[in-house]
Amino acid sequence: MLSTIVSVVVLGIAVGVVVSTSGVDSSSRAPEDGQASGPASREPSGTDSHRLGFGLSFGDTLTWATDAELARSLDDAKELGVRWVRVDLSWRNIQPDSASQYVWTRFDRVVAAARKRGLDVLPTIGYTPRWAAAADCSSTSQTCPPAADDQFAAFARRAAERYAPEGVHTWEIWNEPNIKPFWRTGPNAQRYAALLTATARAIRSMDKDAYLLLGGLAAVKTDPAKQYVSHQAYLAELARLGALDQVNAISYHPYTYPLLPSTRTATGTRFEDIADTSDSLVSTLRRFGKPKMPIWLTETGAPTWSQGTAADSPDDRNTRHVTPRLQAEIASDTVPAAAAIPSVAAVFWFSYRDGEPETPDSRTSQHFGLLYSDGRRKTAFAAWEKAIRSYQEQQQG
Image 1 (cartoon, helix red, strand yellow):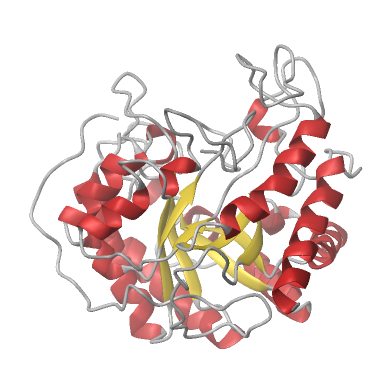
Image 2 (image 1 turned 180 degrees about the horizontal axis):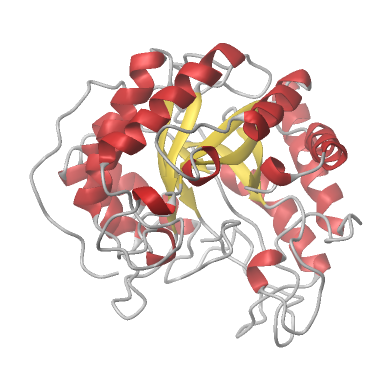
């Protein structure tokens, strides 16, 4: 349930009227590694092995990188063998001061640099400028929901109009709306469904080939004190509201550390919640008539710095972080674990580079990178690259 927004922060899900549908073919699938981006229709194969896409989640870091940092970051992504780079397209960055102002330059640079290297961009579109925030959101955080869905949709329409000609056709609409850190007024499925509907229509009005992802669900248990709603409950409520008709796929963030993603348990890990538990995402989709809807894992990973003792084994408990050795083991295991689930269409590692040096007061959220903050590669960099390459060689064989 991590992202690169520094300010972190649910009560019961609101129930309301069903949002109107758009007739989206929910069984369609985005391009695989090695394919050009654009319209897609391939369904999960229904077998134990299928073509899996790979990505690297950068959050908002590429937007503010120097030219040299941007070049190195994307060159490393290419070396890793990923096809996708997931990058925040923050409304607050593009229209910081008013509805009449657009500042596209920094994101233009990211898209151009990625496309030059044959990388596809997955924008996570979201994050509200202060002038457009909902009146009931007292925080100054950019994770306040917007006051008016049509204003956010207008921004999305302009973004699609600008970037579809540049090869950007796949969009993730918001991030982790089922937890308060990323929906600051407290998760509200009805409110998010309305935003999703307006945004989906706006993007598709500019790009009929757009492939839309649900905002990545944080893998959490329902916790009223923290204002978290579980990924299963939130997905089910969105399905009841008809919101899944607006998207081609859902996205999900199954962090399992210190356990390996392939670990099987009696109670179910966040990875097992994809397809192997009684209340899995797949079973929820099936229950609501979406059995073939693809699932994108747009974040997963493990941090290598925090307070306390690092776990060096999946058997270690009561820990907030792992050793670099165990992070590499998790990276190696993630690819075959994801490939074994037919509904999983893509898996992204979060993140590329640590955001802070390793100091006693450094935040756990800043240490999920494949690189340390000074640019040195962790063991997990080579492990992730090898896992992707091994998978691709097996597919070609």
